[in-house]
Image (cartoon, rainbow, N blue to C red; front, side):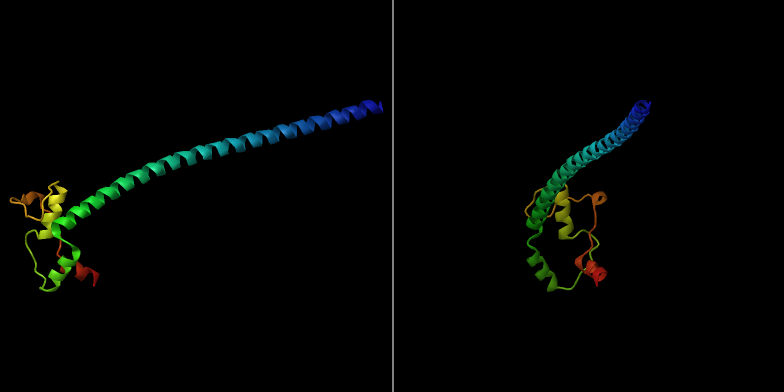
Length: 138
């Protein structure tokens, strides 16, 4: 009888250990599932970041082209600064040279510094003169 009781105890312990292992395996499966989900999210985020990086690079190239066009239309910044330093600031009611250059580039015109012959007043975007900007910074 003792051996039957001992056998029953051993079988009960084995059953309890099996239940504990099954519970632990379920926890491991849940953890692996969460890790898989996070890995997929990371891959999607990396792909999105790469796409955004390519878009920013394209925009930076476009911006460099626009700045180059503006510099060629307006002249070098040193010439513009030295010319403006020699004369007092003037308030314009119309568009200045930099405004015209900006609009030429924005409208896709590639001119060599010449002012456009006709200006559409409905499409004008007036840019403040440097003196007006300086008073904001000062």
